[in-house]
Length: 348
Image 1 (tube, rainbow, N blue to C red):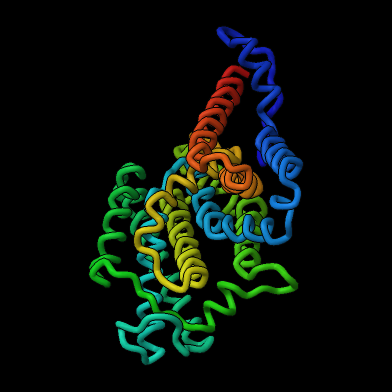
Image 2: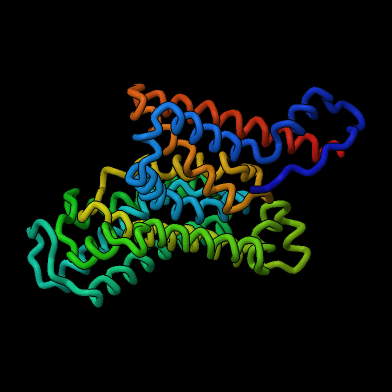
């Protein structure tokens, strides 16, 4: 997670009270909040919350959202936004499931699992990744070349991807997928760790390496900090933006296969709020909506805040609707703290 830079005495109209709050809350507060939530729920219901099964389910519930959020982190650090990831996930799950169903030799009306092997699963994965990359590239081209605001572009492709997914199936989910996918990935585990969790952890680890230890990652931060300065420094800003949005779409394709594996069906109506969920996770993790600041580690923490809240409320018997209230309040707090840090940087 990005740690706020030290605050200096501001010249002019800097507010000392604002600076003090920034120093207190600017770095690592969301990690302390997550630890606090885990401790509170663990102490109140140790047998239920702290059980191996519950902790495993927490990680599984976070896995798909984490993969989507890794891509969103790159986009927001580059001072963009991607509202299409949930619809791209649905489109990629539909196209990949249809290909796997066809290769398995099962009719379109088949329900349940089919007998397709790992070759069929690999073909489905390739289709899912390519489908996600296709929509991501469209987003990137429209944002970087046509210079249409990212909010409008991705809102438009959200509707287009979801609409095409519904057209492909007449709005009906594909309910037959390879048994190998469901048992090997959806409910499979290695050394007791669910496969979905391992895939999400690998995606986050690779994303962290790319973002923080490669030239491409440096360019992502540069584009988000000052696009014109990055261009003058010789960075291919258009190419980087296209690559960033393509990466986000590709990860949505990976998340589509994970979703299909977990639920043994496509879920056309189940991802309407995924885009907002990823944005919330990324911002909660300390990534600035203004671009140029962020980390994958922060996003991992941000993903778990609403999931731990919901799980804890259910265990305590609190209506789960309070989870959205609490998450919204924390999100507003996160944006406010980001603004405090931004003002302090501007007055240094």
